[in-house]
Image 1 (cartoon, rainbow, N blue to C red):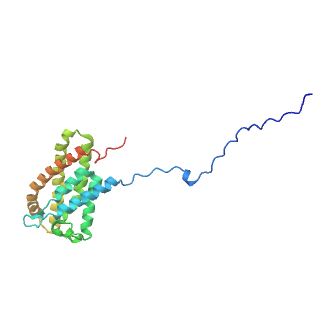
Image 2: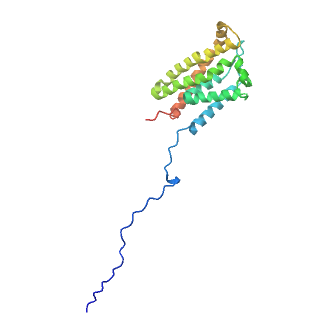
Image 3: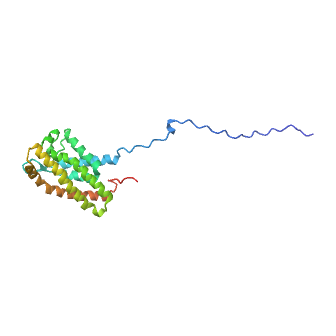
Length: 225
């Protein structure tokens, strides 16, 4: 006799139910791209070259002529700062140096500090430092990015000489005329003895800056594609 009772087969697993999406939490939201901001390398370079400017001012200056303007290494440090760092970071380093002196730190030549230096014979030269770093820094950025390395030294020398004459010494003469009430001819006569030495400092600054750019090609970052 045949048993017609249906045999119950083991339960077969049914199709898996589609998994529901886990609710999004704050941790599952993708991070937003970070802004460019100021990178650590720029901060470090600005700090280093600000310290270089301070060190150049600490070296005792040599008085020259009767106007009370000493020969110092500051112009060398300013030009080197612009040539190496470019316009933005170079100008920022020089501006930070000036601010340190204006708030009372003795970082100017002969240990001077405070806003009263702006009424002295060196006022025009101090103001020119920021402009000079911006101008020669812009020239350096263009030359290093676009010109062949063989042309770096002559092109940067032309830019440095022009900046020294048109910016540093021109504003220095204006400062002498305003603060010492000198006529133009007397201010030019008081300024001229400093020019040959500053041009020699330009040569030193350019040679040093070119060596830096050849050794560290990323100091003046190339624009992103």
